[in-house]
Image 1 (tube, rainbow over the protein chains, first blue to last red):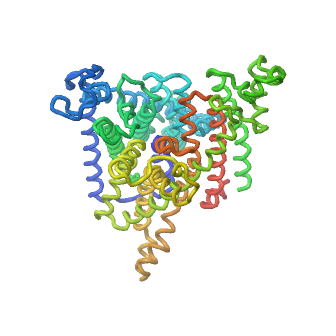
Image 2 (image 1 turned 90 degrees about the vertical axis):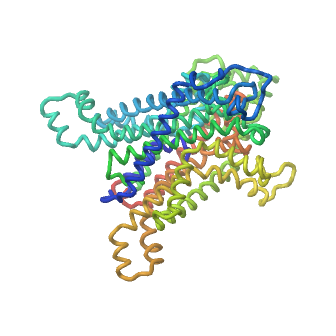
Image 3 (image 1 turned 90 degrees about the horizontal axis):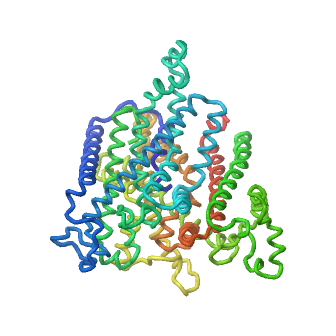
Length: 301
Length: 318
């Protein structure tokens, strides 16, 4: 299964299949918290570096200097220079801004769409539910990466387009998750009580059902973020996402498609690749930790 | 169960219909005309060109053009590639087998190895094996596939020239199954990594769950050999959720290899898709969209049916 889709299924499908665990080892919970703390630390550092990129980087990321093409790491350029003489460290920082921003914004779009549709679908039921579910199924029918590159080819690739497209294709798994939760929460007594005193549909959905769904939404959001970052990286790597000279971690790795760069100039593609991997890993750690904290009976290890 | 399958089949038809409308909408939105691409470009240029254009109804309204396009699709004509002029069906036909070869092998690898690793991790919980396998599975999920492919290419091709870096067979030589497998090894391995990582996690969780359960404790108390306890009871029950997840992965047999095919120049549908995008060959793209979504739909149905066999509870609830 594509990495890009792993997000929702890790949270939804498996949980319904296993019985709930009744006790957990103290050791495991403690080590899980440590992983989540490490993840959070990494994300904070990356976030800090990305936000204060102009201060931390010495050179301008787009300043080309044809005298120092493809230089290996040195004292003046800690990560070397790329094919146009630009400082790699500076590009890494600014690329971090774009990659992280795209990931966060696209995930936000996905989560909003997914949560709203899931709430409506689960609460209203009937033909509305059916319609939304069929619609979701049809969108899911298109292979993720294929649909992404198809849409980008049609509407053109700019940062905004990429954010919107990734967001518009990433909500399908979240809808199922939210809907499932809403279906079980709907039967709870506090919902019936609220309805008995005359609460209307929207009020019920927002004030009562939404808070119950929030823990699952938060966990799913973390996974969506990692999926969105990977999607953007893959698109940019293929040259179909954010275009140079705007740097993103994905399109910095694009140059590695040539065997020469791959073999002889690893400083061009290893740092961005490692950066993406660490970010996604950190997000996954934090997501795991959150899931553990919000639902202690969760069985997913 | 019959009713369940029938219901799924019936829903599949309007779904495919809607997908065809969406595809035609796309084809209309991009440069070029989807309907004229349905005719052999050689024939359009020749003597019967005008009559052909008349028949294709190029100047009619959009719904009529959709109807004509649909008629052509249903009679097996997926149009002619902008880039090469070949019928799309022939171009795609060449690419299906390589894709299936790659995805099937990687599927088997990820299922078998993932399950084995997960079971080992569960059986040796908290040991160095468990720890390293868990870390491995976390990395497998987080490292971008294309980066992993680059790393693999770097180590096995650039640094130690051990494996071929592209293609299905060595160019120019007649087809040789060993050569084919040699070329298949690296792409299949890289493709299988992230599914293998997920499978490892799930297998480990499922196995741990089962090992802590009462009936396993009973079996041990009865004095059964450890081999029997694990092999006969624990494993059988732990496998249930894994089967579910595996059947869910079936649709990806046709669609999951895009990036890997591109990176290893594997001549399958994935690489075809990327090339079509680069070349702006929209007819080929539309044909690919229809074929791939059709296959995914079919694989979903198949997976649902297989699942009802695996889990009898679904059969009863219908």
